[in-house]
Length: 153
Image 1: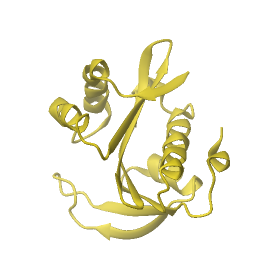
Image 2: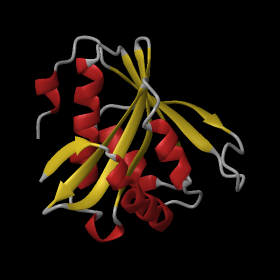
Image 3: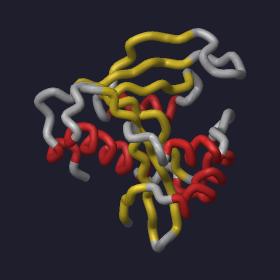
Image 4: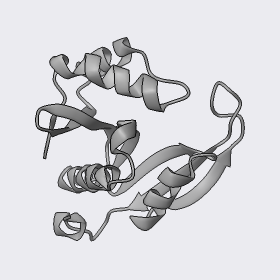
């Protein structure tokens, strides 16, 4: 299993995963545009050349925003999401970020559980954040004083 930087050749496959797992999937064009964003970092998790997950974040000064993370349905529940999130936290630490932020649907209890497990705390509820009217939970993790080794598998 490897984690590698997203390439243009990966976009079609992650777009399909996005449609499979999210209520409001990002369009393929969004990922294409992100490839040109100097502040965006996207990665794919592959096993035997098959993309089984992906994640992306933006770095803005001392903050990193985890803006997407997803695992193919048939691979969920096998700790791949945790492996990918640990990788993203390590990348944020390498980039000297002080905080990592994210938003999660109030109904996504599996994701919330993982975020809590890795030390994210809830900061506020945003009412009607998603297009379908569902609220989101803003979460944050402080990274000061942490090292990459703290998030090894």
